[in-house]
Image (tube, rainbow, N blue to C red; front, side, top):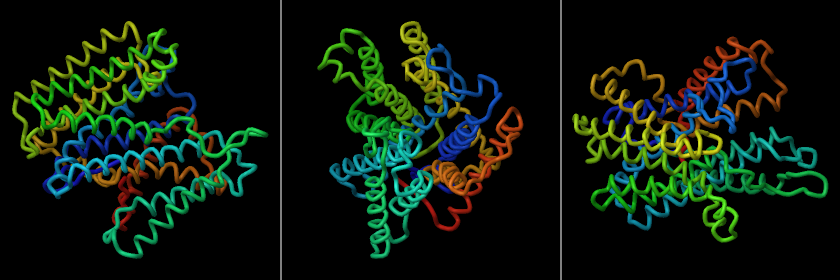
Length: 406
């Protein structure tokens, strides 16, 4: 998760992009906490996999993917402006992907599949040590090449290795170490980021770049559709080639974010977009909606199954939300209301992991909330308060100098 200094709420930054990121983080914390509340309406939960529908909750993860895509052109331009060679840029992409996959893998194994009784420490203590190691390795230090920082990062890496070695999953005679049950949200973002970066690198210096990126989105969707075809999924080689339809679907959302960034800020200056660019964005929204509708009949609408219609509808919604924020913040200059989102927008990885740290800490200490806060509107209200408290924690820790960056 990366926050590029070329855009944000501060001076010389693009307010609408950071506000979109901050709002996404705020809603994510809210809906994640809301998942543990009983007696809430169906529209406030993820739609079940077997239901042909989506709720606003199902758009939160796509919004993460979309904002990752919007950041890619800015991040590339900045690194190239700083003198990075193509090899260095490729290495940065691979290292960032590996970091997202690694953190996602640890988080998934901390949530499920562990055999705590044969581990030397509780899973909650294990999780807390893991997050301490994450902070040690991926903090943004003022002097990243100083010896103390090198020692801290090395200690964090050793900590991750040690935690991986003592982890046990499974049961009985089937005990094993850490396993790829799934990649977790960060891991899914990592794979989609890798695909989108590769696509953007291919299309950025070619004309017309937007059309090439649209073709890449179509390729991702086609990959998903082919993977659902029984003769393909049932064939050994073809089934292996088309074994990652979810990653392809998620990549299409990131690429939609890339296209949106190029539509509004194609020259990299961040200047106000004219009517022509707004019309291009509206045309893209309509294209995505029509394509999603055509595909929904065959593949349905499902976040859990990562269907094309869900991807395309979610991307269209994200473009519409960004357009409104761009008009409000960058055109009309109505910005005061969004200041409280700035710390989380500038420090998204920390904002993402804080709720997991709080959960592990409270479970380790045996603390819990009154039952009334796990039910109905009282529970929903607490979730909203909790999300704001997390943003406040991020702000305080940021002022103390703690910032994370993968």
